[in-house]
Image (cartoon, rainbow, N blue to C red; front, top):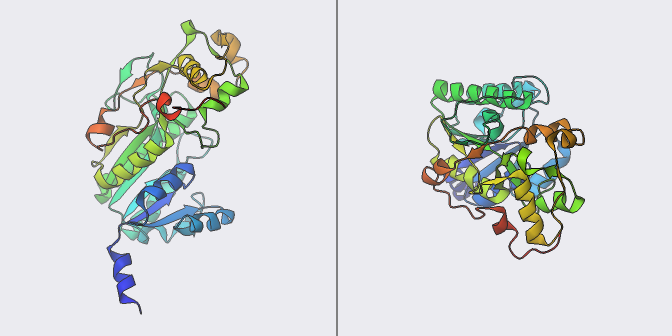
Length: 303
């Protein structure tokens, strides 16, 4: 037996990532090789990809509690990035995960990736984490339910639970999250008198925030993870267009644009809020690498 290797493994912090998509893979780059990482996936086809990323893949499905029996004993830290189901007002997936973690009794810290959508429409007001939640979509209700389950779990088990409320995630190398793509497709935006404030965070800054929360998050604490920008949605995409040298999007009245976009897209256009990020900087000590979209697009001229 290689006792030296065993001691090295035992001395490393251990992390279980649940929902290891794009952001989870960015977190892995933050913590390896100093941490031992296990990633849960419901897809057998992804196991090789996760193994190649340097982590231990574990097959399991949050919709099937019987596949989660080993989770409670694999790590001291948990990063929960898995989405709730697509229907209903509750999140049974988070419930199944917490039941499995409680059986092992090993978890010391748990970080959950929620959404700023739990605040609902704030009519453009500046808000912070003390703002009461006011979910206005089923999707936001499911996140509120998950947050409540996690906080109760933290109090019950003496686990440090940190909830990260996340707005729109973008990065130039993120599928579905490259701000240049919308501009290049010529998708319209709201006219100025109908426009709403929007909030964003770069995927790399989010990954660093997850890591900071895993090591420095306060117990049962909510932290907004967003950049420093203060732009209405149309102004945001105007700025992207200007930075990459493409025409600005067409502006439309709300009623006309609502008829052209999906219900999901419209739900983002129907809520307006400006989110403060002081806790992110003060409590987690995060210095944003991308304080606004201009920083991400510096030097980029084509979509």
